[in-house]
Length: 275
Image (tube, rainbow, N blue to C red; front, side, top):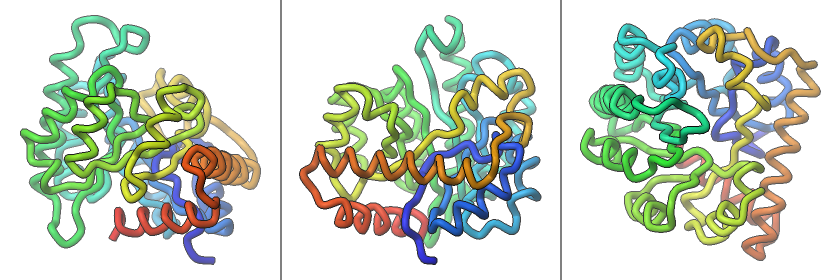
């Protein structure tokens, strides 16, 4: 089966049976951009998912782990080393929400993100640019500053995951050529629905950010692969497919489009992202 849907941001390694979930997703025509939260999580997942041709495994340095000190200087250096020679990078970025991180972590987050972006831009190949899935909560402008100064906006393909910034920040990111992956949680907000309606169609992707509560499930162990949610593989793949399908349906309604037409556009967007 050819590509039918593309999940632009999923925590595949948080499933106990990640390879089986990926295989069931492949049978449904779904490709997965599998983000991780630490370089250790990426390296643990890599041999498990090596045979899954529908999985694009990304090296991560999640801002929550950086802010909490769960990703230390060695982890940052390790992530940078991997980002310089690995095409796919995520989940990375900054989070300045007091709901998620303690005060005083902004400088540490920015320095870690800048180091990672510098490495990703340096390692990006013009014929197959690096792809970054960026977490930017109350920090879209700051993330764009870093992405610009490190050369990522020019040399890499940047995808904002679950974008929640201001309309001015959205406009800046659109003009810079960034992509945006939209999930059901984003569409549950008025701002998210409006952004999904007005985003340039060729810069739009969909995602799940599944499994639910993935970040909390792995907070204690730093995101080690296969330490989180245990589900039946077919049930988990079906959950991913249904979440993507609901997202597509809602976006099509917001944009007054035929769903099949939207799916064709989303597939073309994914293929361009990964080409």
